[in-house]
Length: 242
Image (cartoon, rainbow, N blue to C red; front, top):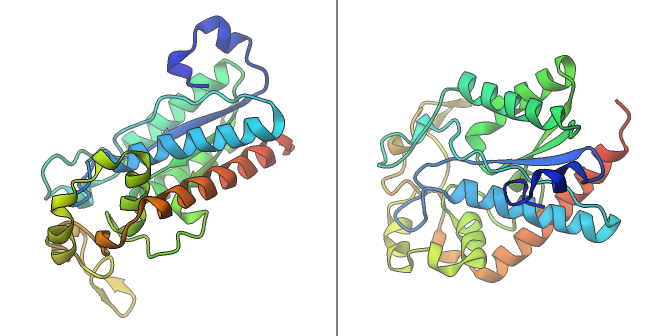
């Protein structure tokens, strides 16, 4: 159930105390993929997970509107990227969870689509669970499943998911340029230290990995796997004593 599409009586009558909050980012994903890739992925995985959980249990779970801007200053050299500080991001997530808890949805799974959000989410979910009238955990979809390829950035994993969701998201005529300007890995590493703070220091196109290897079929498998994994987390959180 999309919270933003429901009426207040429908939310009032929704049973249970689970809710899902997708969070993403608005940042470059190369010349072939939209700035909203991470937000699109988080929203799609949230929907798939709630649908899988509903099929298993018959219970519906409200999905809050996606938080579209995250911790992404590392991509600021590329046009259109938006970012907020970790403090602002944590505060926004925490207060959104508090709003859900006010309406009794006090077990919240945050579905994350952006790697740059993970540290802030780990910290804020701990704070929420220790100090607030709610319990929260973060589910980063690509860390929770077998992606069959290196995650990269704007590479085969994310591009495949976009192709499955809607092929028009991907600018097919830019795939070769995205690949040719990409790096093989994230960062510039010496003795376990990443010397590069921003992505333009090691990738010309903004991409890590080879997006020409993407397929819609892989994207379909990724969405199915991540939906099932999220449904597992929903069931575990629902049954957990706290």
